[in-house]
Image 1 (cartoon, rainbow, N blue to C red):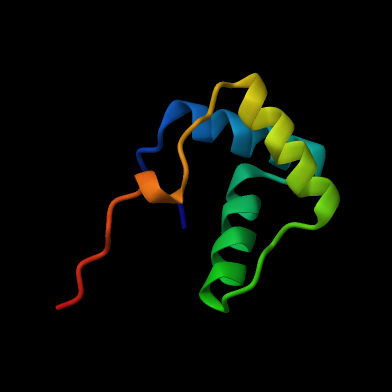
Image 2: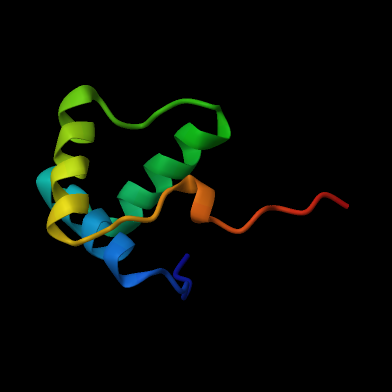
Length: 74
């Protein structure tokens, strides 16, 4: 299913670079990340994490999980 989502542009650049490195679509990468996180697992190996750090630096992505919106429980 196709959906429109808003995402910070530096995050998008890093995600696109990771998807390109693995020769998969951005949608497939997002699906992989979400499925792993729903099970409390990391979708990335050590090499990919290193690549992500390089891309974060290259694109000036200084946001961390602490910058995300807190989820409110009902």
